Length: 184
Image (cartoon, rainbow, N blue to C red; front, side):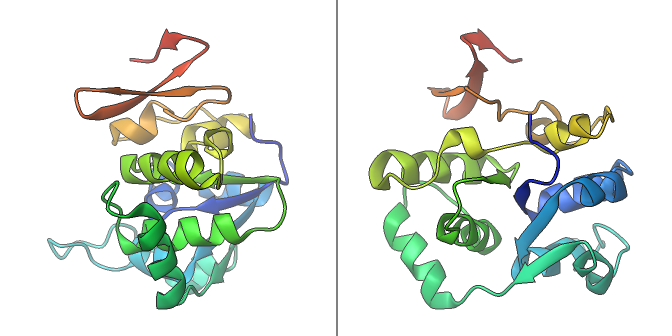
């Protein structure tokens, strides 16, 4: 469980999911959100089909989330550390850059994409950076404020990031098992 008041680095997909499930204000009031400025832009711009994912202006999100710029040089460092081990887009790289630059041990990363999960696992195993125990799902954040949510996207919905979980590869997919029991 993510303690209330914890610093949480939040991804664009998690922001969109929180607005879609109407839990945004509750979780934003309970946690200290930070994100890469690119992630906030990504959450509020039009997608590849021309549809806006959420009808919220970036300035509204910035009332609840500290938007931190990440330089291209910082993203290149993450690229070099990953060395093509997993496919992550610029928003995920920017968010990982912020999280790994954090000086405090007490931080959480809410990045529901499989690429983010694989990248953090690779960075932890090969560079002793970050930890799978620092991952959380949007579902976990909502549960922490007493809400049960149902998301459209399976990775976010199932809360595949569990405290004490371990990583398994199967069918080119990553699954997290909590205490040895599969989560389906």
